[in-house]
Length: 217
Length: 45
Image 1 (cartoon, helix red, strand yellow):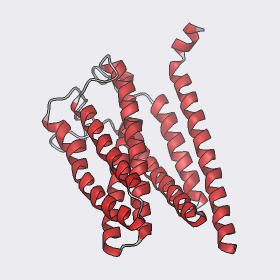
Image 2: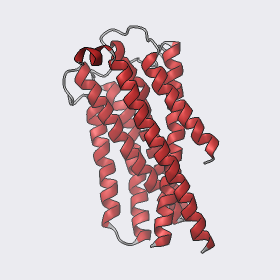
Image 3: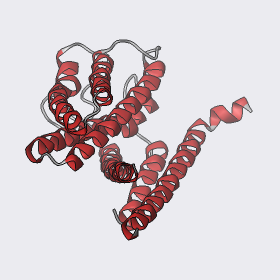
């Protein structure tokens, strides 16, 4: 990744932080200024989904080509996805304390992310339990594909079919119409773009470190 | 002090978030440079 893109990431995320906190937002009943969490919390969840998707795609590519580099990308991406899932959980939990009165409420979204963390936690246990690199790559690739099948269900479907305290229709309503204020939407989309670029930078670093580690060993 | 913190809570949050982000960015930037150097060294070995 060239330096221009890195500086661009810096400018976008700094801008999102400044605008996200300083730009006035319309009053949203029962949320008020706490609605600003959307600029950080939703991109964290988005990056987690994107990272698990990249992991699944590279798992498929590994099974097709048997190239261990692909497995390395799948593993690195799953690790970053796991980290961002934890960040989404922590930011959501802090927000829940101020909005719902307690850090953890077993809300459908909280339960979903908890199960997702367990599923991907098992992925890392599986990897660490196998010594042979080919066998490790083969089994964890299959697991990664199966694990990803659950992601859309837990992130997008389950929280919508079970009654939840979680704010719905914050961005798009059930008719597919954008309900978010245009200024908020601009900051939110910039945040999504900035964090997506940030994810690819972190992934690039992680993969290069892993490759160096294997070469030095 | 409590009054000051309460009145300026938003700016304090912004300041802390910016300090964390700037620190993280420069740490990653340096890390990237060091990895590049290691890759170069390993390739010329």
